[in-house]
Length: 210
Image 1 (cartoon, rainbow, N blue to C red):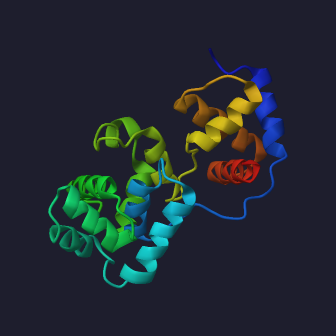
Image 2: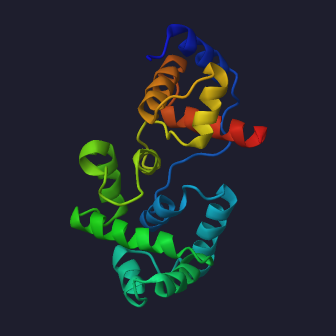
Image 3: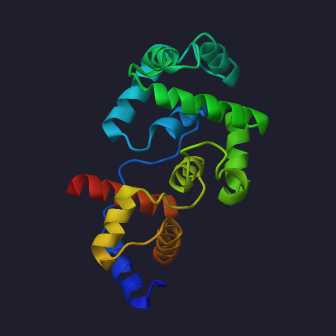
C-alpha cells in the first residue's frame, strides 16, 4: 500500500510542531564512527554514550588510526574471551559480539580503501546500500547503513525503532524501512530542513515522550 496524501499531510503537520533539535548527528572522527557503527543499534543510548565516553577518556591517545586499532585487536584472540577482553579495554563493557562485528567492519573498510575519515566521508556521499553495504557484514542492515552515512552529513533518515514509532503513531500502520525514509525525506524537503535534522527532532521527541 502506497503512502497516501492524507497520511503525508498528517506526518507533515506533526513534524511542523517538533521543536528544533538540541543535538546533532555529525561525527568527524574516524575511529568513533567505526565504534558507533557496531555499538549503536539494539543497545540503550546511554550505554552507547558511556562506551564512547570510556574510549575518549581512557583510550583516545592510544587508538587514533586504523593501524592503531588493528594492532590492538591483533593482541586479542578472535573468540569470545578474547573479544570480551578487547571490549573491556576499548569501551569498559563486555560486548564481545560487537568486537566481532568491529573486526569484520575493519576488514571490509580496509578492503575498500576506507581507512581514514576523509575516505569514509567520500564513500558515504557516493555509496549505495544495495551495492556497497547490503550483506557485506552479517547483522548490519539498512538502518545501520543509514545511521553511518548520516553521521557523515548525508541527507537521509535512519529508519530505527524511534522513527518507526513516531510515524506509526500518526498513520496507525506499519511501513517498511524504505517507505519510512522516503516519507520523511519528502517531509523534510517540504519543511525546508535537512533530512537528518528532522530525524534528530523525531528522536528527541520520542525520547522525551518515553
